[in-house]
Length: 246
Image (tube, rainbow, N blue to C red; front, side, top):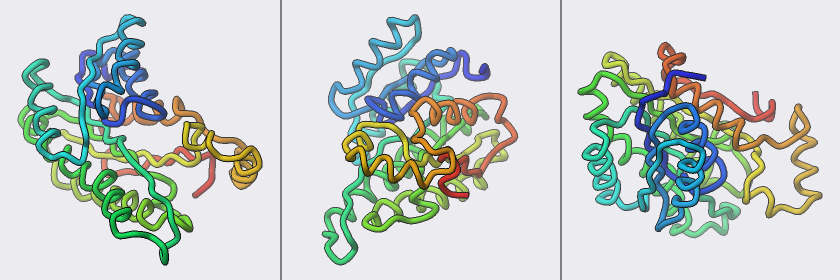
């Protein structure tokens, strides 16, 4: 798919799983990728992208640090002159039944999954509006649409991203900035591989397509929404869940 060649894309949580696949997909389609993750964790995917002939750089970033987000965005603008695509992928889960959930676990998940998206979008919005072009893609979750026992904090943060996506989309559409979300279902990542084989089989049985998704399948949806081909799509949630939630 074309439509991102020559663009500059900032991807948070780019070091592994879905974020890594998104960074690779954008780069292989011609975008320059600013891969953000804690410490030097994004360097491996950057080396992989460069080894394949793509353009990428690693940026250390804790998305709960508002000043750090501001510095990362400012640095990318200084080096590349623009940011065309933002993918808010960084996220955490701290699962617990509601009666046992600690306030600090609630706060940590909301800070990483929702507040960080607010901070990052706010940081990139002015240059996107000025250049009259931008693609923002927020990674939400099937859990934000359907809920899940033991994940009240995670579900709230991901459902919040859906409302956030739609509200910002309305605000910036007149400047050719689109804001959409991708909602993955159960994806084959480090998190799901930690489940027992029986648990994975049990979840797969509930999915109409009878299997887990891949990070690359999620990345394909992100690539589409970030591309010129999706220029008339905004405020939408694209589910990549094998029919798990309809």
